[in-house]
Length: 262
Image (cartoon, rainbow, N blue to C red; front, side, top):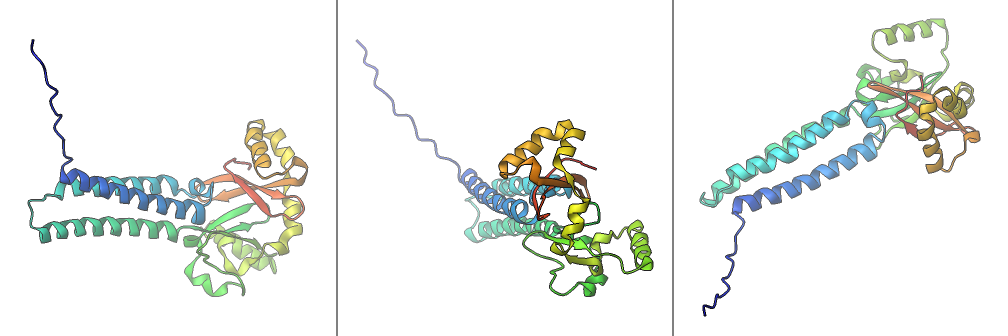
């Protein structure tokens, strides 16, 4: 009788370059998640990411950065290299990756939404790079022209005369929106009566756009609101339109939705 003895299964070691690439990918993914949280929770709260046209570009940038860095490490990592040469190669890879990521993040930051401005019959999102640099000395006292911790609420003051109104209209036709002109800014709260006058009942939007009803009703439930105490204004940004839901008493926005209510 032949007795078969169990043979030990040889231990397969993961190649050093594979481990190095995996570790690089892990840290790249953590860094990418941190950047995404900064962008979407602070600078571009939903739905401003898509309405500002930054989402597709940002996701592509992160994807390329997260994938290419570890792939290059997989190629250059070789334990047969002298330690100093290997360290130099890896440092160069990391520095190039961080440089590309830093440039991309700076571009996203420079174009962040700075303000949501009540513009007579709508709320317009004004981005930091849409405010002409030469107008910065016109910012009213107490207003931060370029906030770094997310968009703030402002309103446009009434025009002083017909000449100022004509000038603002002509500038808007040439590409400088009224909401991007600091000399026209004022505190959002001071415009509350005008905002509520321009706003419309959310029930009217549901009736006019039945397809919007589920999203609107869900927003009301999520924010513990009712149709009776909610009004809305159209929301405009450089890459899309949406809807701002406001408290019917205070005019404060409590939800932004990617629903074109124009």
